[in-house]
Image 1 (cartoon, one colour):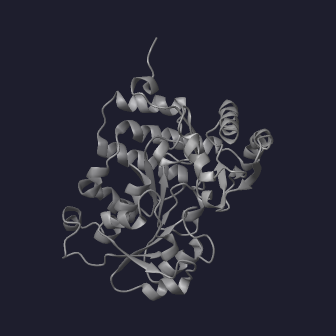
Image 2: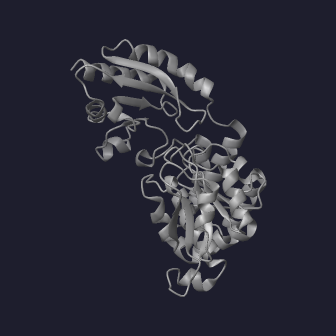
Image 3: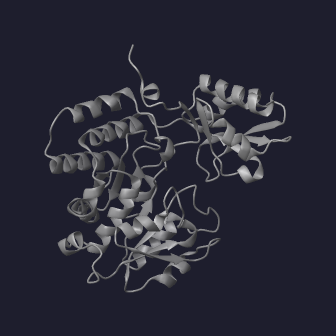
Length: 366
């Protein structure tokens, strides 16, 4: 009998009811993705040619000028910033932080300068950029972006994410208009977004996706957009991109995952609501719990179980206790201060939902 990795390394099993989170390994990949990774792992390639040809193939699928696979969406930010600052200069590639390099400013709405596991500004700095915040924490209009544009501006960065401030922020379309009015490129970080076509159709010059989130691929990322800019990013493989390189197995695995994503799409909101209904009903049978279905706060077609903790228990305590035993249950904790725990079921099956209900019942009746 073979020993699995949970047993070999003395690890707890995990029920991931928090969503596509990096700290839990992001996503489960399909058998066909694993097959593609296996082929990549067991064969040799001219890596530069592999990167070029997979990029061309994905660009055709996504109807964009060019595409480049990177190790993660974070690497996509850093290398996009570096590429747009250096503009194909080998001097910049080899000396990315030299004082001789100018035009380092990257403008970002203040409400978009968030920590998603690391601060956005850390990835900008990795690429040799300097963050310039526009607007305020609760509002950023097109004119706020324009106020900050100077001769040192290299690009505008827009973060499309549930982590950012959602209200009173300029739209991607408005950001495109401001950027192009001033002959500047717009980078859209859409790491966890499900729409692979809208942002480039709106005119964004570079769009960044995580391979492991909505696309359900291995650890990877993708940058798509204007061909000259992608070529500048590809050049970063000789510079900072060397420390962020992606393996041949994950390149091929990501391509297969994206093919499957385009063919099949992702689970619909209606399907999530249907799967949630018996789960919600079971949760509401537990004393001092009030459960309901809620939509994603950023307006995405994602539905979750929102559980209000009552009685003497505190939500933060319940969250902690759910992680202590195996399987450890991880949830969305953003509203814990309000006594609410959210359960994202995209990677949770029916059997795991029963285990969540059982554990909550034990905790609440403890």
